[in-house]
Amino acid sequence: MTSSQVYTWEPSDRAIAERYGLRAQDVLRFDTNTSPAAPEFAAALLAEPFDPPLNEYPDSSYGDLTAAAAAYLGVATDRVVVGAGADEILDLAGKAWLGEGRRTLIPTPTYPMYAVLSSQRGAVIERIPRRQPAEGYALDVEALVARLDGAAVVWLCAPNNPTGAPEDPAKLAAILDAAGALEPAPIVVIDEAYAEFVTESAVAWLDRYDHLLVVRTVSKAFGLAGVRVGYAVGARRLIAALETVRPPGSISTVSAALAAAALRRPGIARENAARLSAEREWLAAGLSARGWRAVPSVTNFLLVSIGSAADADAAAEHLLRSGIVPRTFPGDHPLAGHLRLTVRSRDQDERLLAAVERWPSVTDSATRHP
Image (tube, rainbow, N blue to C red; front, top):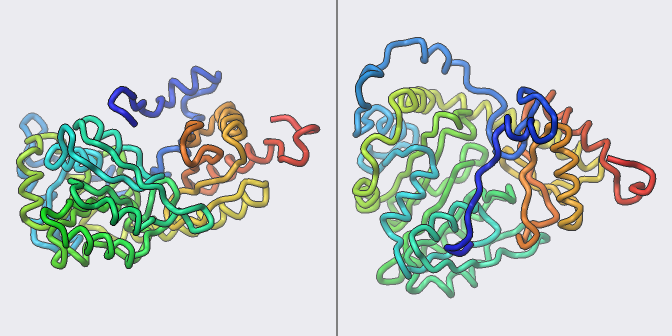
């Protein structure tokens, strides 16, 4: 993305419903990787009085939320900073370490916000293509390491979005080692939005690398995307740099309380991740049986190969007419020809499969119609 390009956000349920002549309540979001249900404790908590009360500003230090995040990860509170979603944490990193002409490295394909935020800061974006699909879109460590010298920030996503693949810890460590050998060392941001779906985490390396920043969220496995709370953990010098550019009240009192309560209940994320992982395998098999090949994933979403970019666009339009919203990729994207589909509840996934069943396969497209 160049500075002249504009990133557009997802259309609302209402906008999609109006376009396709549907009811807004019948629109299913298979594009946002959110959980199909919020945790049960949330409704009860909303009925309780808040401290401070809602007529006052929130505690700008977010002490309770920060302590909950620190306890969840097993680190000291001064190594944690919180923000309005992981996206604000990523934005803070851009504010702290990027600027006009500074270089940033982005292995692609990956989460598009890295390029959006880097572009907003006037940074020079260098995209490092990942390896081929047959290699699971793995990081090209050699190519990335060769470009490290002089870079300000390296953006990594583990597991990677939108491919759903895990990152090899040895490769992540190799990048961190190479970056640490440089002076100054590039800041390596590892976005672990889907960390609860895997067992490996770079949090274990914090004492080894003082140029490592790990970003987390309560949006995915905790099922609180609407709360908009994320947090980062790293060496004290990195956290201090983020604190200097963090707005004093970007997280509401309600959001901070809900996120802190969730982080004190880690079983919620573990159970939800386990359930969605099992559902993912069921959904992948169902899609495959209908001719849509799902790329192996460890997350709560599936990258699905449809065919050409035109095939994927047509399939997306078919799903939208059924009230199902997929994530699409433009024709110049390395994943053009694919759709990304969130794993949701069984009844919602069955509705997706029913729509896919109505889509013509390559072999019978002459006789079947969407």
